[in-house]
Image (cartoon, rainbow over all chains, first blue to last red):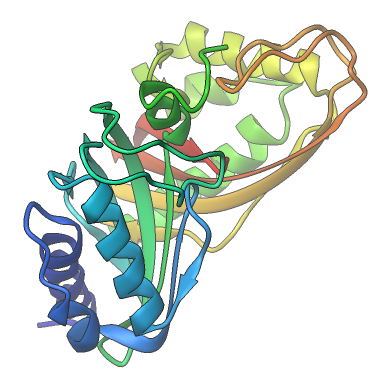
Length: 149
Length: 135
């Protein structure tokens, strides 16, 4: 397989095991570079295995049915892989304060469903950087954290 | 040249002539498919050359000095992805196309934007451009 095909396979596993319907956090040790940067519009950036695991644990406690999946084929060139995705979840867990814009009180029952595009940079078969942009305004409006304009 | 290089060249011209030279939008007829889809916001897709030109013109009227710079593209089969940043001054009419809220006329505000664009090329023409902006 070419490097880009290898990289796509790594990102495919990452999307399934980190972002998918069920989460297997052992994937972080396996596929993330030690100082991996995880950055999404709605959240503060996270760096390193422990920080990234803590992010996902907190996110799934608040949104237990959280699930994202690919919306199109992965795009890869050189060290980069780009994924388009869709997904979301229901806020049935504890209060959630990880959104930069504001906090949700416990178990609001509100649902978010939104789309985005993420660019991942790989280095030596590990994910060095994951930077995502999403239609976060939609999610924040669905959650009642931002009013429709 | 391989297909990916051809597609990068098309998108490079699109960034230069469509996104950075809105005074002459003939490039839309040259490079965009007749039913091109510009997915700038999921709620307000623009379909077709006229709609795409009208969108760019309203953006130009609001931000006449808007300049967009793209990083190295990532190309794979029929897709080209470009991460970009832009800066512009809002000196024109009110602009209500930002989902986060409208800007009143000539606010004088400098707006810094960044985002990721995914372009799909079909038969040498731009079939779809999907844009995600950083919050």
